[in-house]
Image (cartoon, rainbow, N blue to C red):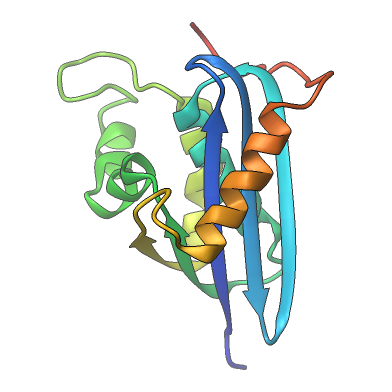
Length: 156
């Protein structure tokens, strides 16, 4: 059976950093499109960028080939430059022996990366890329919402 090919566009936003934050994703497969987004009362931009990727990949019901478009060098580099693998190997410590930030999210992302064949594509944020701009609007709308839940994984 042939693996489905999916395009996923993701973005995270934070009003203040830390501050209220939002994440968003637009997924496309076989002519269908789905938008998803969420937010938290107090979080960081990097957490929202990672969470956007997690939520996009978690939505997929079976292993897929995923072209994932993000404006986050942090997320892309953590995967492509093998930072994530190194952090895991080093007991979740950075090269200078400090605890890895956002470990809870990286631990949620890894099994999804193992399940899907993900190809990361970096896009410049706020440069007119239509899907990135759409995700930015969705994420900022979430970050601006009232009554956002706490980000229980966020540590100041």
